[in-house]
Image 1 (tube, rainbow, N blue to C red):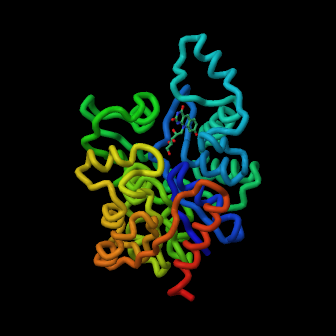
Image 2 (cartoon, rainbow, N blue to C red):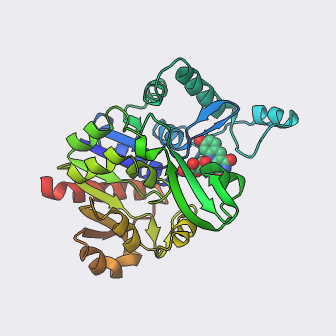
Image 3 (cartoon, rainbow, N blue to C red):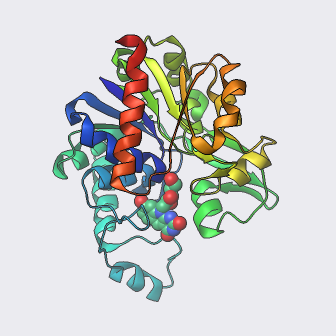
Amino acid sequence: MICCIAGGVGAARFLEGLVCIAPARNLSVIVNTGDDMELYDLHISPDLDIVIYTLAGIVDDLKGWGIRGDTFHSLDMLGRYGGETWFKIGDKDLATHIYRSYILRQGFTLSEATARICRSLGVEVNVMPMSDDRVETMVNTEVGQLGFQDYLVKRGAGDKVTGVTFRGSEYAHPALGVVESLCNSDRVIVCPSNPILSIGPILAVPRVRMALRETDARILAISPIVGGAPVKGPTDKIMRGLGLEVSALAVAELYKDFLDVFIIDQIDRELRDRIEALGIEVIVTNTLMKSLRDKVQLARTALEAAQEENG
Ligand code: FO1
C-alpha cells in the first residue's frame, strides 16, 4: 500500500505517473483542503478537484486545474449580474461545486462528498481530504491577512508575504482513514507540492504529523524546488517571506522530523551531502515532469527508492 500526501497541480502530475505503474486499489491520497473557499455559497475544494480531475483523465492539462474543454457561460452570466468573476469556474466544474455543496448541506462530510465524486468519475484511488474540519490557509502580507485564493488568484500572488497561518488546524481532526492510511501503508510519498502552502496545512493537523513520525512506513518526498526556483507557483516568494532559503535543502529541513528519503533534481546534486547530514537519504534524478514519460519515470524512481528498505 502506498499513501501520498498531495497539494494541487504538481502532486496531480506526479500521481498521473504513479497510477500508470501501481494499481489504483493500492493507492490512497491525502489532499490539502487549506485552499478551500466559499463562493456563491458553494464549497470549492481546488486541490481535491485538481487531483480527482487528473486521475479521472478530464483535467485541463495546460492549466493543470479545471476541466478540459470547459465553457464559462455561467461565469459570464454571473458577471452580467455584477457578481465576482475573478475565480474562473467553468460550467462543468461548477456542477462539481454545486454537487459537493448539496451533499455537505445534507449533513454529510467532505470525505463522503469526495468519495461520491470519485465514484461517479471512475476514480478508483482512495482520495481523501486531510480533514473534514475547516482549516483555512491565511497569508499574512504587507496589505494585511488574505485568504489563500485571494492572495494567489485574486491578487496574483503580488503582495509581500510576512507569514502563513493555518486557521483552525490546531483543533482539526484527520478525516476518516487518513491516520489509518499513513500507519498501514508500506510507503508514504510526499508529492512535489509547495511545502508551506500545500503540504504545510496537512502537516499542521496535529494527528497527521504525529502519524508521520510514528508510522513504520518508509517516507519519501520529492523536492518541488529545482535549482533554487519552484517548478510552479509562488513557493519562492512564500519561502523568502518566511525567511527561508529557496532550495531543496530548506524543504528537507521542513520535513526532517519524519523524512527517510528525499528525491532532488540533478541540478541540485551538490546539496546531497548537506541533506544527508540531516539524516535523510538522497536520490538524485530528473524531477521535471514535462511528458507522461517523465511522470512515469519519476514515479518509478520514487517507488524503487521507497521500496529499498522495506523490501
Ligand atoms: N487558479 C488560478 O490561477 N486562477 C483561477 O481562476 C482558478 C480557478 C480555479 C477554479 C477551480 C479550481 O478547482 C481551481 C482553480 N484554480 C485557479 C487553481 C487553484 O486555485 C490553485 O492552483 C490551487 O488552489 C493551488 O493548488
